[in-house]
Length: 609
Image: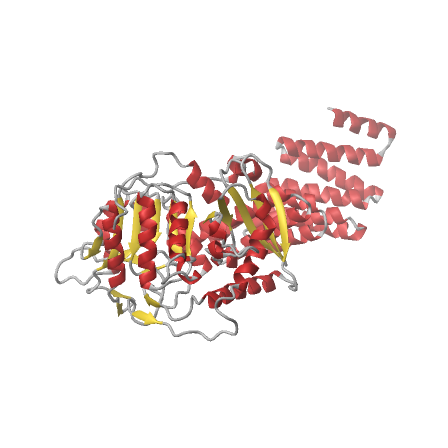
């Protein structure tokens, strides 16, 4: 009514500009009411008057409103025509804000037409106009997720990188505006989605439960309910960003510049190089006898390899890289860590850092003062901590080692026996008072049958970390029937279907004779098991001497049967190894990491073995 009175008065006094403004306001009102045809009618009158009086800015505004109205009607081609006219005039009159909005609206229209690459480019142009808040409003509108979903539907995973890259740019944009909590929210959403994509693409399964940031007001408010100090880590050009989350406190932002590097690519290369230097310094690549339990090798899997010593330019005992990593990652947040529990949410090359062995200026290892665990994302942490109390089993153990594979051909090759894997699970079985599944008993069918009933799962077999595939003894078949992959290949989809409810999964598998592990493999397989129903996962960042693995597992399980939390049993096992004469070197005790929740298990065993 007020806009109509405005229009009437403008006509009476001959105020053409006022008349056009009234038509514009009426158009916007009808647009808000969902009466798009009426909105177009008034918009066209606004446009006509703007042309009559030579009001270029008003003409551009009218074109933009017409574009929005036609877009609301689903006529995206016509919407694009009007938005392009809006863009042209905005450039002519130097209206940067209008130019940015035109790019944003064009991006939205092209998204609806499934021209995703053009949409992304136009949205980037919107961001580049300097109207940061307006661009953020468009991005926060949920369009990025809609675009990502459409990309997957139409193109599979080939364009997921573009979506991930856009999410990365968005959290950095928030950070540059001093919006640390919003930056954390976007960074976490991107990390959680990337991990979800990885699990679905590589492991072929969806998680059994889910949690979304849309269910809470902000990441900051939900994160404050996390029980232990949690540090979310991300790379931002030439610096490392830390969001420190503590119970019932505001999120604290810290930064650490990586000096002498000018780009994020350089920083990532440096961190990867520092990791490999660390392995050389501690001797993780030198002279270790290890059973090959990986499916990635072209040579016969299952043999034991004696690696020759590696020549390096500095003494193995220098441990300078462990100190450098401490200075880069721990020192910036050390004063914010309360208590003796620390949860890390790292990314990329930082996922492989042996945090337990990082050395502070007092020459103390980090694990001497802190119990450390990883979590792939805050979403995952929320998943496991908020799951119902009766969701996971409290008792029972499933121990699988050295399955019988005489009749199995995997990718055209035979798989060797794993005598140390057998020895390992037999020892654990004696501690827990549980008979392990070994040899012909370790069939795929038997493992899947027991999987949903136990609190602990320990796997010592051939496996592939990148896909979560594990080789088990084939299910019994007719004598004339040669085992097919479905008879012996255990996949994450199988785990999901079997309704895994374990509090702890220990993966003593997947390592090669060379001991190399990819960051995405460690994160991927642990995330897959967590998503399939496990509450926590214990993995190794590199392979170690078979006898050292045996000794470590013995100390670890003795701690578990005493009722210790997994993190406590892990730290105690590291301490026992560190104080031993034979396996006191860092390379023997530092690779083991806990991913997920910190749990206890009700195991009726004995520590006298």
